[in-house]
Length: 143
Image (tube, rainbow, N blue to C red; front, side, top):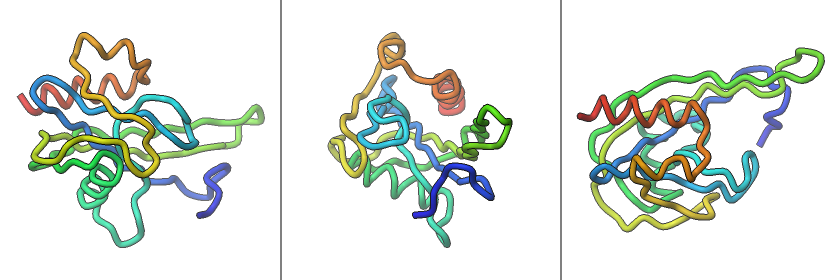
């Protein structure tokens, strides 16, 4: 896989915001980047793969579950620069949201742990501001 540092183009990442009742599915990263951090399931889109197809593949690979219909929740550009102002990382993250359909959630692929978190438990997972915002937006879209 090409190095993602100092890219010549943005990397496309696809995320899945999946609810089971009022709980949202979270994944603890088992590999870099962000090793050990909690986030939403997701990963890099493959060449020739549709965005929703990627969301479903990543969800199954990382958590062992499937979701019902998915809708676009948000698109976020995550850009970080080095001390000289050069773009060190640039990810365009497309998040889809939906409801759990089937499967017993378990960690897989590059995930160390998974959790179904209730709204009042989210602070304990130290999620990014962007992840918290897309979870809330998704909750509203699906209501």
